[in-house]
Length: 100
Image 1 (cartoon, rainbow, N blue to C red):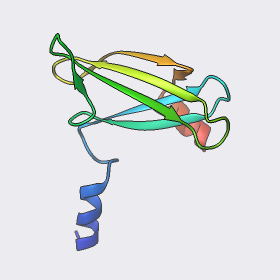
Image 2 (cartoon, one colour; image 1 turned 120 degrees about the vertical axis):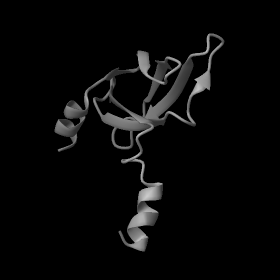
Image 3 (cartoon, rainbow, N blue to C red; image 1 turned 90 degrees about the vertical axis):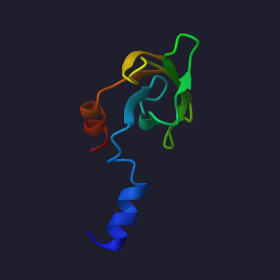
């Protein structure tokens, strides 16, 4: 691996194993959005010892509606529940099909 490739791998979020990808569709315009939750730095601890992450997502093509996502993780940082406002969760395959 060359020097530039090693620098790129350090800053790449695609290959980071401690991330959780979220795919959503805006309820208003249908735009699909993808975001990554960093399981080491983006989670907040709850009183019960579990974790929660909140994200507000805005697309960049159609209506700029805010899609609000709340993800609940257990102590092992595994997803146990998810909520969404102004959108719907979609699969990675649906996201890829919509973006071509």
